Length: 296
Image (cartoon, rainbow, N blue to C red; front, side, top):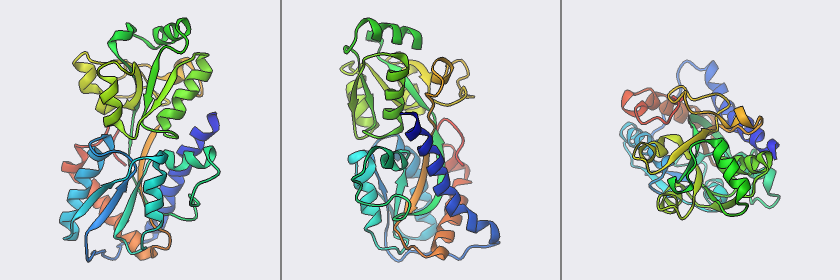
């Protein structure tokens, strides 16, 4: 089960690198000026952590391009529904898709994908990364990862934990933790963070893997307890929080976000969109919306 997590990080970075490499030999990219609204298809529910990443980016791109840039949320299927919509769109720059780790985890989990992940998508750029955290509801009465594991061993099958969907990095990390720690905890998948929090905050689901930044207001308010982060190393903003890797080597996950486009998008349009996104991401008003690690 460790292999899909490695595949996710390496493959998504490879997608980003494939888009970035042609720019190295370019001093200036041609301009991209859409003639109608541009859609960014997101595989998660509206109002979640991915929207917090995409909305400031979409607004700035809209200002730059002179056309609305609209977020089109297509949750479900472990990101397959949104990805297939990108694959089927015309390759003219007016449709982009948000690539999360499940994009490259899915080929390791499923043999019935309706597309070829590497052949049927055009990589555009990596736009950022996020720290994912294991949090627990106070009703569990645990303060640390060790106490969580101890309780799970004492009460097999009694603790339900949420992820943001089947095949997401949080799902795979939770399964790795379950296997490495030898615990029986029940997975409850959602199609994004908003659904997960609806069940987590009242305690109907007792634990979850969620984006650290989205969890911190609830942690500070005492509504959730932060047990660990999934980064390979401790997060620099929260150095007191241990990593899963410290207790269970091999259980590490980094959340990475990128943009992809339909197959056959001309290279000159890829370069132009890449350059515009890099320009927008460099603006302070966009960077302040970054997740718990700096945007790329």
